Length: 239
Image (cartoon, rainbow, N blue to C red):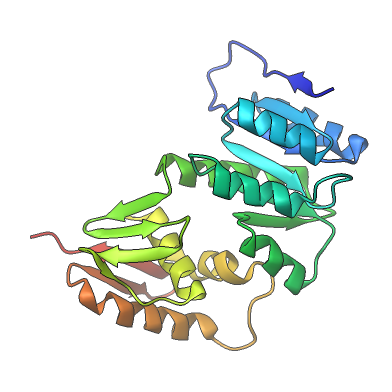
């Protein structure tokens, strides 16, 4: 049986509709209770099958998904969300699998963010809010700034129908800049978007930004500006 846990009514705070998928019932209840305290609407599933049932019945703002489920692997659930749903629902993966290769596997299967156990419940809230904010920028798999269109499902970018040549890392960096436009993005945020909490030993960010700039040469109205001591910002030159 899938438990339906509803938010408190009558509170004018920003509310999110969240699905928590966690086979550890004690941890699951802690998550549900804490998220409900934010006046969010929370559904809970203890298995992958229950999660798939709810995912097909309702629209969620964020899915908080454990990887190690007893029936269907969380990676398969994430693949279903990203490949079968008509809208792009953000997925925050919670797992004890903390090796870089395991995190990489999660992202390759469509995860939007990754948080390893043990974690601070307050950080789950912050990450859910950040993912929901990104989702509110676009209700489909496409992001558009000026004549630049990013397909977040196919992970491709085009400018006036011309494809941009981007690596996986380059696409992630450009997508992060587009999502934050017109605000600047700190170096820390950009590094986290690609490497999470395991940044490379060298200044790889600078070289990847350089390759993105090269790809944007076919887009004369767009540029990436370096802000000293802050980070980078996508700029649009309007006629």
